[in-house]
Amino acid sequence: MNLEKVVFGFFVLLAATLNFGYVIGDISNPALHNVYELYAAVAVNIIATILKFGDRTQIGAVQLATSLVASIQLIIATLVWIWASYVDVGGLTPQHMASVVSIAAGALLANVVSVVLLVVETVSYRRR
Image (tube, rainbow, N blue to C red):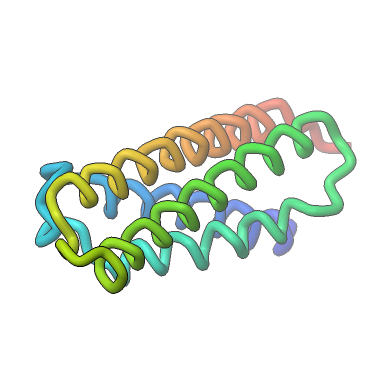
């Protein structure tokens, strides 16, 4: 068993599950979307992105791309939440929350693609 592959797979799956946990629920209800879960999704996605650097294969390049997309979208969702909560006079409205969750849902799609690629790579792996 390769510990590096275990850690890599762990962070890829954790990024996807945290992202899914954040997105699930009524899109415009802030009570159903925990800000700390969003922050955890951002942090874990960034760690997963860092772990994907150095893989020189084509599938590794696509995985890095999906991870970069997910991280950037989650950072944008976090910035929208911060802006709505602390800068906008109206505060965090259902419209702001819908935007945050929609952007995070895009990141979830990128994370799902990353998990699918991980499974495909694992299934196609041959012992040498």
